[in-house]
Image 1 (cartoon, rainbow, N blue to C red):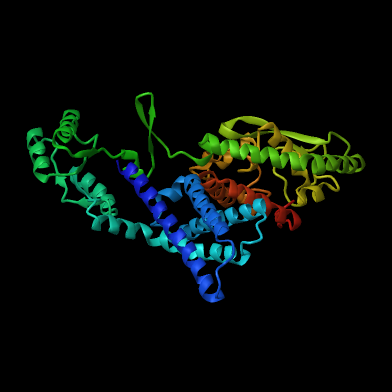
Image 2: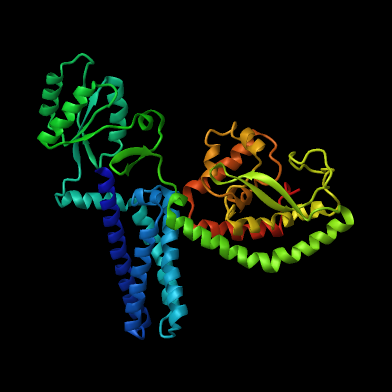
Length: 459
């Protein structure tokens, strides 16, 4: 019920933002008349630009990640800045695409740039405070947004749930909780619930007898109030769950990750294939000749080094790299370290400039890897690293990448201690939870900078 209400609030909020943005467009157009002393030419073209702005905002709202939808209009400063930047870029991108396709010279480029800049403060202010204002308008319109809410259960249970309810007073009207005893007759409890006249009754599923829970649900159906049964794992441990329906079987599952959505996976796969097709012919193939030549003089043997790594959902695959170590060495599984004697002359240069990693774009083309994602490790290392972070295995929910957020942030090369593992895992888990195609593009571009100026840990 509340999730549906949240969707309604989100749609109302997005509609209000679009209306305000169109008003800003009109005011900015009129301001040009005041300062320039003449109307902008081709007013019909500006109506087309307004339609482009409307379409860009609708598409942005439709493709917005779920965490940003839930917090629409009540975000803290940093999330509000990120969401506002996303919206402004969508608007600016719509303008740029329209101009590129139509090549309309009658539209002022300065007008489009100025309008794109002005949308950011509008989006930021509304993203920070708009939800509060919107709900206030709803209450003034007598839409009765708040639900008279009663919590029933043991004292400790009721107190823990009441604290959560109190944090959402824009949606709830919390009433004093009904503390019940384990041996309280069900008739007495039903009478007390009826006397409290709730719109919403929150009750435990485990602390009350099954028959009592059943009769409370039936009372709600007869009397016209709603019943909530909180998920105990969520209440006690802060774990989030979503209700999924499997042919009539309702199950609770963790929140859907971005790359669990088929559309997002298809977009990412198209990006991976496009980047691999661009890099393999002009870069990887010539590098094969260069590396082969270096190997012939310093360490004859196979061009590629193949090793089993852990991929998406724990699938084992063979990763491809240019061989940078002697064929005969004491331990191929040991991580490379500074001054490692296993690395042949010239191999250190290949590793420092990440030349040895380029064959992994073949893995990307084959579908075992992605351009961007958590770096894949050997099975032995995976089992060791997962001891140092309780959510480490969540990295395997997505395909491993040639590069990743952790690598761009400086976590590259040898893993020396538990702090290294936790640092990498923190960035990898952020990527898994907040993936979007824009993040992939940004990390791919940032990786180019890392190649030009390798960090000190690149060896």
